[in-house]
Length: 105
Image (cartoon, rainbow, N blue to C red):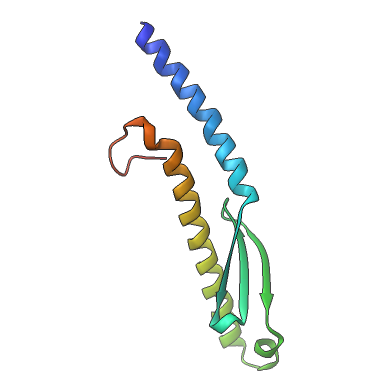
């Protein structure tokens, strides 16, 4: 019974740590520049977009398809970078738990 209590205590502690990491991630940002730096996107660790900057040259090029593709590529790149950063932070949290490979949070 004491073992069960310890497991519950550990789970509650981990939930608190997880919430703390998620809060920290929402404050951390990554920047990704696509199309030779013509589109820059800043994403947060909680997978939200913070900022998009588009070089006026790309806007005035009168090529909406190129602009759309550049924005999509930059957004996807920034979200991938944010996801990788979040994954590293979560790995730190779960590293001492002895979970099987790929079963982290």
